[in-house]
Amino acid sequence: MRTTSTSTRRKVRTGGFLAVLCSAALLLGATGTAQATYPVGGLTTAVSNFIFSPSAVAGANNWSCKPSAAHPYPVVLVHATGVNLGANWVALSPMLANAGYCVFAFNYGMTWLSLGRIGGLGNISDSASTLSSFVEKVRASTGASKVDMVGHSQGGMMPNYYIKRLGGASKVHTFIGLSPSNHGTTLSGVVTLGANLNLLGFTNSLLWGLGIPGLAQQMSTSSFQQSLFGDGDTVAGPRYVVIQTKYDHVVTPYASAFLKGSNVTNILIQDQCPNDTVGHIGMFADSPVLQNVMNQLGSNVAGFKATCSGYGVFV
Image 1: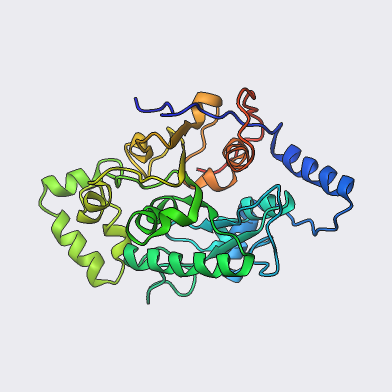
Image 2: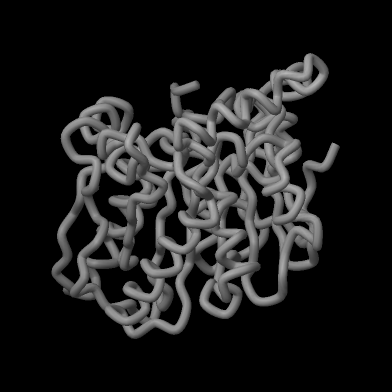
């Protein structure tokens, strides 16, 4: 199975979810730098934000933030299909901000069905254009030449279009995908079944007709997927990281999320933490997943042993 990295796999450097926050607090105390401490949320906060705070989340979009020498690249967070920035990033956004990063997040892919909350439904190429404009806004505000990027599900796939087709390769330093829908999904065989029953064309037409092409474009058989990855998985410039779980029942087969390339690090959570049963949705708040993100955005010192405490309890 394609579960190993094409470059040396980085191990997590933190001692657990709380250790990240404690380390950041100690560092800030040692330097005497005043900084707000943002609450790290979980499922309850995510549900509340989905309804009441779809466009805001703790730690994100402080437009006066300037990157530090320790964290020179602002981090752009790209949410998954069916949610919004307020729900998707209740854990990672405050974690990053508390550790001293400049953090930014946006909503994309809203259609008439979205009700201002359900993102990722629109045409993916249009969503990539939205991402492009947002990155330019972040770069102009922070003065940074490049950004780091973390995306979940469609948010871990859609930026590939920005990087490969819209000139983003020179503007992205590290791109981390959490259970990204790279190469599309069979939805546990539903797409394959639909094709065999000659229903797939009808389904795609229905999705486009309803104004939610973002779903059809994430099918493994879609022309969008074939075109996006037909000329290779990656391009020169960014460093790519994919963090995936073998219990992903949304992006199937789960290994399709992984990328090929000399500038890719593929991480299967169960290689580090065999007892972690996190699924596709739960990646946003699973401690080993978040530890990996923090490590990959940090100094990437090799040789640290994975700490498998504090599993997320979501599916």
